[in-house]
Image 1 (cartoon, one colour):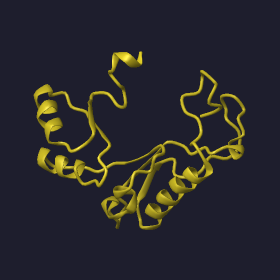
Image 2 (cartoon, helix red, strand yellow):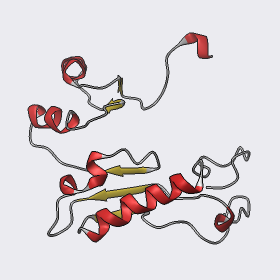
Image 3 (cartoon, rainbow, N blue to C red):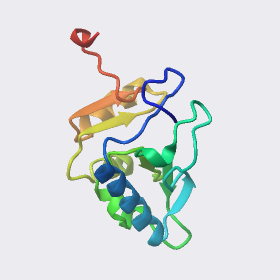
Length: 149
């Protein structure tokens, strides 16, 4: 992480202090309810090793991954229900395709979904059942509109 204009940097700050606070609050609340943090989970401080960017002077939050804790389910947190609009994901296991689809559709918003599988027929079948504005297969957030090239 570093300065947004640095080509060596793959991730910059969030858009605003308000958005940073929203992400911090969602993650902190999930952790206080018992969710486990696999990586990230706290606002960045200090300086970037890439370009000496002062993380305290911007809205920097690291890529963060959360999952169930020993005595808590990530599905019971607000983070599961609300989009963080930040570099935060939750990991939830499933036992079969129907359960995976049920989990995928357990959202008020369903803006976008990414589907990863080695089975092309499964990808087509599952993508038809996911209720989202767009479903990416084997890619995430790539727009395939040639007008955008």
